[in-house]
Image 1 (cartoon, rainbow, N blue to C red):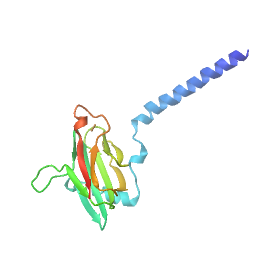
Image 2 (cartoon, protein in one colour):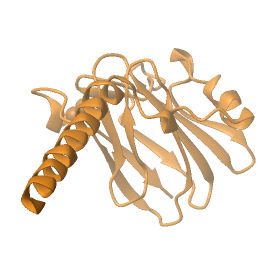
Image 3 (spheres, rainbow, N blue to C red):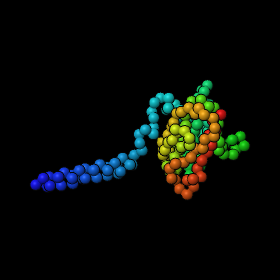
Image 4 (cartoon, rainbow, N blue to C red):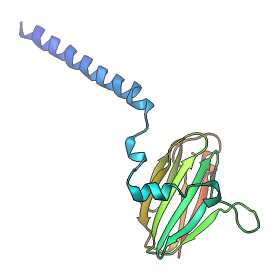
Length: 162
Ligand code: CUA
């Protein structure tokens, strides 16, 4: 008699579990996590500077910088230098307040500045941002940690903290 109750309970739990899992995968999976878009006024203002002509590092205050990056397969676009060549390395003073703003023009890419806490997922149509202070001088490699295709491992850029 008890066996029957436990069996029903067990199957019931399994069903609830499967429904929750299925709902999570199919319903939630189609929407990006809401934490990607931060809508405090300061960030909205920062986002407004995300334009093609503003790619790369911009100084926006005495000790404040914004870095705009457009990812695509398989490149991080940081703008062009004076000679028109693509920028592959940017420099930021140690201890400065820096906001990384990045998005992707095609598929999902990662944005991980190795050796730091800067780690974002870039999704089409969304600007991800990360505000931080890099205190230790050195060269940090920006890498893609979301598999994005055959050139995934070649996606990189350098951030030098001086
Ligand atoms: Cu971009 Cu992997």
